[in-house]
Length: 234
Ligand SMILES: *Cc1c(COP(=O)(O)O)cnc(C)c1O
Image (cartoon, rainbow, N blue to C red; front, top):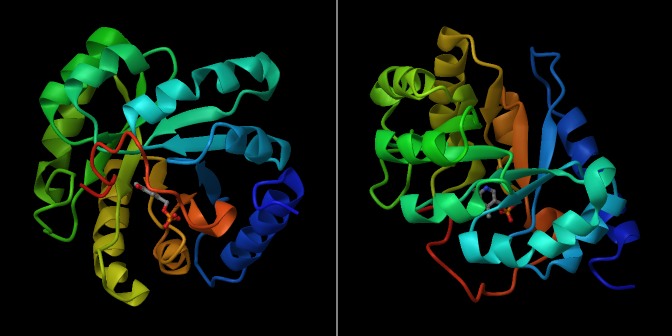
């Protein structure tokens, strides 16, 4: 059976749900799973949707645009929410407007301004760099309040925050950054705290994630993307 059959994806999705349920946490909120299909063939989206995935995460503008026909073919009732989770150049926003439902990597006001112009009132997440790594996107934790105000002034809906754990360290080492981001979410009374990927989802859920973004644990190892514009951690 091929890796990307709906049956296989459904089995893996169930196993991720079990992993989430096994985490001890003081929260009762549901943890949403975003199926990260970046760099895979568009057909993976069909398999994911058939397996029950309702949110698709994509990182690269060209890659996502090439999947537009597949997404549109699903029709309004089966169409998943499309989250843009990669580093985003302002000049790509225009083409993506109308396709992206949630812009998850707002880290500067120039980008917020462009999204407000091309997709008025859009739902966004502010990306926070909680680890201080230089090659990673996201605003500083101290800048979240101001950027959120800016987004709100522009008419955008700030649903919450997104962060990515430290690169190349054991999963446990993501906890301090995740806790910082969770505390900002609480201070600001936001709903969404998107943190955790295949390797560190358990730590993220223990720290209060409401949304994990899962690629390889659902679909296996990724092919090297043709349209790479940064690895999504940048
Ligand atoms: C690629 C990516 C993911 C998924 O990573 P996996 O390790 O394959 O689960 C999640 N979030 C972001 C921002 C990504 O770039």
